[in-house]
Length: 109
Image (cartoon, rainbow, N blue to C red; front, side):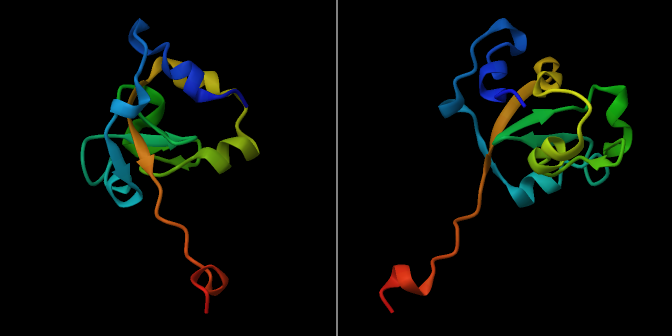
């Protein structure tokens, strides 16, 4: 798949400054599923897109894919289209990933 960071700049014909975008946690993204709130957001490769204006994401579901989550792995596995599908959606934030667990070897125990 193509890199959405390059396509993010195409949204609204203005370059998107990734470091100025707000960060949202996985939990905050999960609330934007089209059911708990009116917002319908999805994440792909670290960026969060507002897909709420698409008729294809009615009620937060699009061909078995659910809004409010990171779809990176799902789309790499079985999407019939490229990452350019996100070009038409506004990038509204970055996904803040939880810190990776520290193993006992890294803590010196």
